[in-house]
Length: 499
Ligand SMILES: NC(=O)C1=CN([C@@H]2O[C@H](COP(=O)(O)OP(=O)(O)OC[C@H]3O[C@@H](n4cnc5c(N)ncnc54)[C@H](OP(=O)(O)O)[C@@H]3O)[C@@H](O)[C@H]2O)[C@@H](O)CC1
Ligand SMILES: [K+]
Image (cartoon, rainbow, N blue to C red):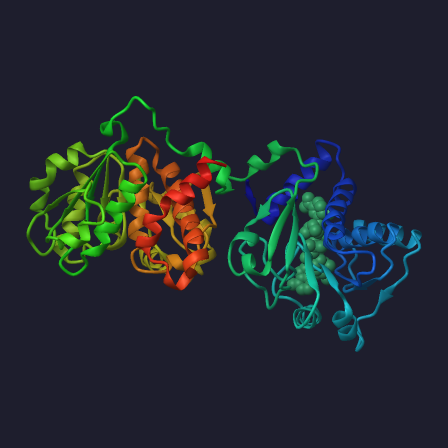
């Protein structure tokens, strides 16, 4: 499913009306019917509704919904309207609902708090994708009153009022919805925090937008369906060499564990051969987790440029290289990283400490960088922009550097600068040392099986996130470790395969 900006949505709305003859009036009626359907599934005719509406088309959707309910015999409906500049459609809807005989409009005065506290369901149609800048004082006060409500449910139309549809940022304050019903497709504000949290559960009502108009956006949400289609095939008549050869160059005396998690990730996702080379030797107990991993130590503290000669055969044979987890950041090691990248033409996953060498690397599309927030800030060298919601900056950076980026965060951004995918599986079980190393290994294991770097990154992000959700539903987000996630990867895999 495509993820849209507010402008893209408006363009789609415009084309649907001008090129296809399905007018905004029709779309608004469809929007209202979809909200009506959702409401009548969950609330009966005795429910006390309070519609709080702005005077734009978001408010127009609200008026049309209230009218549909009223017409079907839902009699306990109050409507509060905030604002002066009524849009044309809002004006029409106001006339229409009055024509149907509805007249229970309430003022925003001292009584407003009481109306809020007795409502079983508040429908928020204050502001949708037309939000402009910080909220005005009156709007802020109303939102504060609604959010302090102790009982009942809040349904937001299109997006919780106060959330920027392009970034998920809160402009002053925003409605904390239990449910949001949006139209056509997700907006970016639904998938980036804090907007994602404010939205509650999200329902996308398709309306009559022609599907092909959505290709205006180069951004998509990663879904289970997508993963099912992308998973590499495993033909019955095959052997280990058909599933690729992963070379992992990782670890140091200081950080021995990271390399093992990468190796386990690569193996558990189905790579044919996983070869782990570390500078210093790992304790055998660490490797006992997965004896199938081919392991070699160079018997030294850390990698340096000279080691390239020793491992050049392995570099040549590898279908994909992982470099970075637990390497350390000494100058010699950074030279080694550079040497490896220069000596290989194939795909490479550059992670963790190796990201410190990025400035000195000549990147290319089949190199995947996997930074987390801190690493991303350092790579792009900025404290000035709010990098977490700045997918445009990540896209720009990927395009400029000609690399593929997996920016790991609560909403992970996977981009090569031309296409961008957002993954929203996962939880705080992944906010632990080692989960990045595991992800890196999974990406490499998928590349080894013949996938391009984007596809491999999409699948790996989805599966590690989904496994974290499955594992922590049993063990909690506190307790689940990267190794738990590695060992349970099959559960997310089976869920996708059996879907
Ligand atoms: N696109 C589609 O396909 C379809 C779109 N549809 C619907 O249209 C919605 C978009 O409607 P839209 O463009 O009229 O803008 P909208 O969200 O109502 O906001 C304008 C209102 O907000 C107010 N306001 C703004 N900023 C503010 C601030 N900082 N602080 C305070 N107030 C502020 C502004 O007040 P003003 O600045 O004018 O005083 C005005 O009242 C969309 O979300 C969806 O629900 C559906 O019908 C189905 C088809
Ligand atoms: K809204």
